[in-house]
Image 1 (cartoon, helix red, strand yellow):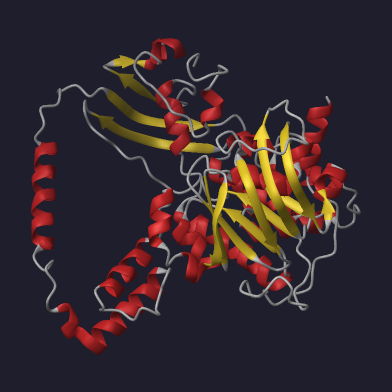
Image 2 (cartoon, rainbow, N blue to C red; image 1 turned 90 degrees about the horizontal axis):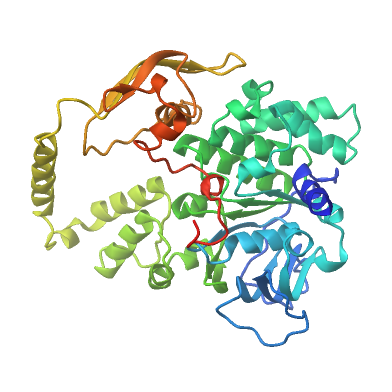
Length: 465
């Protein structure tokens, strides 16, 4: 019960705090002893953390291979917009857990060094006090949800932290409108797509007006349009209200367009901390640690290496990159005349054409292995997720199912694997109507990887699984 109570304190929300006035972002290149530099809101001093260890906290030696974070030193100041990137397993989520107070108050392990929020060590702060300042959106959205419907999800945090009742209706309406989901206010959470749940989680945090927002991959389940909208919202909160934003994100190109500082983690170590323009210039380091740096940056870097583009110009966004290239073409087109790649386009097109013809002439069976026939589906609350969907999948095909958040992608997946049954229409696998099959029988034909892998792992170790 104690662990559940602590997690609810972390997830529920943050007590009402006054929004910080708008501030100028502090220069990251200033020296630490600059008298004008504000005290950091978040500060890590020589922090190492190891999950589930029984070793004493006074242990001085650190085994680099067993620590999720290793000797990390970091300061984040009021009003900053910071991006944290790194490959899987680099320690990004562990860092977010330190910021939110989940470590050390919820996750057990050995914590060395100090983590301070507004100058106070998190070891000496109650989780509820940390929640007054730090708003967190965790990676596993379903684990963050505590209510049955959207309005109650936002209401839960507001009531738990004593927001005056006369303020609550406006808080709910404002947060929903800010994230663009006012139309979802009365929807049940179990009828929402993963992306819609992400937006609800962000709205629930925004309603509590924290001074710092820490978001762990907030756009992982969002389509490109919604992803950019979320970042625009975060940018507005940062610029207009001075809220400090910390975002962990795999979409480096998108993140780099909005944040002003990039922190790079690799194998638990902080390997780079610099303004975006400087961080992205270190392509060799980014490549070495396994980060998918922006293609636009790579393109400009290649042009710079060929002395075609000004070395001082480094771009991130597509529009900015296009403008740089257009300017280069207009001013010195002759530099491109010696390119050895002028005939590459035709050869690439020809190779793709051959592959396309081969794929379409493959000897597939006349009978599709999967047939979706006029399928419609409505949830118990009346929400129509699918309407008259039909398509076939032949043996050996690789098919992409795409669409915006809430388009019905997850629903059609559950229809195929039998977790949901069509309201109308039929599904056939190898010619067998799934209406006559149990889920366990369908599983012999259809394998599914869920959006959240934790939902389908049931053993303690990899070998047992």
